[in-house]
Amino acid sequence: MTKAGSKGGNLRDKLDGNELDLSLSDLNEVPVKELAALPKATIPDLSCNKLTTLPSDFCGLTHLVKLDLSKNKLQQLPADFGRLVNLQHLDLLNNRLITLPVSFAQLKNLKWLDLKDNLLDPVLAKVAGDCLDEKQCKQCANKVLQHRKAVQADQERERQRRLEVEREAEKKREAKQRAKEAQERELRKREKAEEKERRRKEYDALKAAKREQEKKPKKEANQAPKSKSGSRPCKPPPRKHTRSWAVLKLLLLLLLLFGVAGGLVACRVTELQQQPLCTSVNTIYDNAVQGLRRHEILQWVLQTDSQQ
Image (cartoon, rainbow, N blue to C red; front, side, top):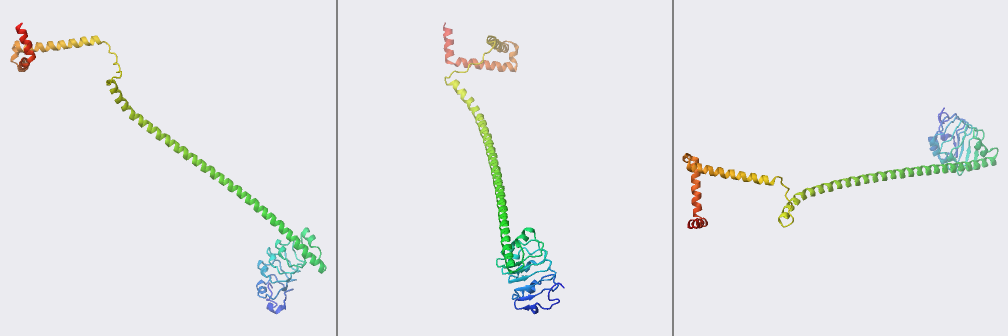
């Protein structure tokens, strides 16, 4: 048998006022749904069964006032057992509990507690003490509640300390990340400024080179008028063999004159005057002589010579 009702019939048949007797029912599981459907059953007796655990939804039975779980095989209670805030009487005699959940401290209405014959750790066993009479059981409830509250406070402080450590670590990570991002921004800004400066220098260099190219023709154009306007002209480069060159030109001129004169004589005196070339030469010569004779100054010179 695993649930009440399989053997003992409907749970309502076992309800006597507020008391519900499920003891000695060979239960392996607690009939949570059936108990939840009986809000009047505030005092269930689940003793002397085979319960090893309590399901988490058992803690939703907040209407429970007195609970007997003695003489089972419970090894632990649910972590949110403290949700049973109306619980005043709790019998856990003769189970296999080692410790109690921290939420046990929330059972602020608990007035009676029996933890005898469990496998409690020495500290908790010392705090609980005996529960041989009503007074001791009340003292057990009070001491255990205070102890679990202290444990809860210690755990809360430890949790807060861990949270603070995590927050500090997170702040450090964020600060480190911000510093890294700021460094990267500064690096990008510096690289951008360097790139801008490099482009500016290249631009200035190109403009300077362009200005130099534009100045060269202007300088050459400005130097020529200066030599004509009275400024000191540049001295011509010295010529070598000037006298020899002048003599050579004179000789060439004389040769040319002799050649022309010889050709003219040949065309007017010799038999060559009948040739077409000489005919043209003689015509040119006659026209030149006639033109010179018509010139007034030349006529005056010729008249003067003839008179003399």
